[in-house]
Length: 464
Image 1: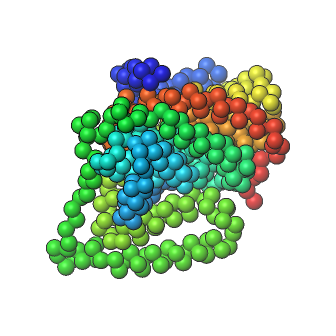
Image 2: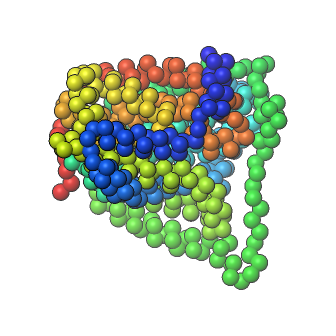
Image 3: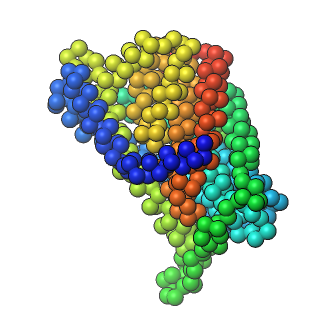
C-alpha cells in the first residue's frame, strides 16, 4: 500500500496544478452552470463581483489562525517544551507515536499550532543520536493533526464560521442560522469521533513505523535536523532599544489579559472562545508574551506570513462562487444551490443524508483543499437539504468537518509548511498517510451515519 501511495504521489506532483487553479476552474464551472440554469449574464457577473469581497473579515480571521499558531509554536517556552518531550521516547517507534499524539492533541486547539509544533518535535527527535527513528514516518505523524482531527477542534473553519453571524455570507445566514459550538464541536458525538481518531491514528502510526533495523533517519536522507535559529543581535541604535526590551510586551500583555478576563466573565466560555476574533486575539497575545521581546515576535511573524498567501488569494474567489451559487437565479427564481439541494433531497432520506454528505465532502475536498473556503461552496445547498430532510444542523457541520479532513491525508496542499520545516517531499510521507486514510475512511463514515440517529433536528436560529 505504501508503494501504491508513493506512485500516486509522484503522479499528483507531476500532473496536479496549484490549488489556485482549482478554485479558478470552479469559478468558471459554477458561472457556466448558472448560465445553463437560465440565469442572465448580468446576474452571474453581478453575483461574482458583489460576492468577491464579502468575506474579507473571515479571510483575515483565517490568516490570523495560521499566524497565531505559528508564533506560539516557535516561541522559546514552546521550543523548551518540545526539547523536553523529545527526551521521553525510548525507541524510534515510540518517538513516532509521541509525534502523532502531540500533533493531534494540539490540533484540537489550533491547526496552525499543530502543523508547526509537530514538525519541530519531529526535528528535535531526529537530533537524538541514540534513537533510530524513521524520519518519514515521524513526518507523516506530524501531519496527522491536519489529516485527522483539526476540524473537530476549536479552529474548525466551518464551526467557527457558523458560530459567528458577522462572518457568515448574508445569503447563508437564513439557511443555517447561528450554530454555537455547543451544537457542533462540543457535542458528545463529535468528541467521541475525535477520541476514536486520536486513538486509531496513534496505533496505526506506531504499527506502521519501521523498526530500528529498517528505519530511514534524517541523516540517511541527507537532512540535517539541527535547530536553525536566526541570530538576533542587540540594539545598535537608541531607537531600537524598545524592540529588544520586554517593557512593551508586559504592558500590552496586561491590557490583553484585562480584556480577556472581562470577555470570559460576561459570558459562557464556550460562547467566548467560539468568537473568531477572541480566539485569534488570545493566540496572538499569548505568542507575543511567550516571545517576550518584540523583536523576536516580529521575526516569527515575518516567517509566518508567507504561509497565508493561499488563503489571501483564494478566499475571495470562494466567496464569489458562493454568491453565484445562491444569487444568480433564473426566471423562475431558482439558483444553482436550489437545483443541487433538490437533488440531495430527492436522492436521500434523513438516515442516508449524513453518509451521502460525508462521501461528497471527502471527494470534493481533494479538489478544493480549504476547510473554510469549501464550506462556503457546500453550505448553501447541503444545509438547505439538511433543513428539508430534518437533519440536525450542527451535526451536518460536523459531518462536513470529519469528512473534509480525510483527503488532507493525501493532498499535498497543506503539507507544504510542514515539509518546509522537515526538509522532506510529499512523496516521503504520503505512503504512511495513505495507510491512515485506508483505515479512517470506513470508520469515519460509519460513525457519521450511526451517530446521526442520536440527534434531533432543530430549525435555524437567527441572531436577535
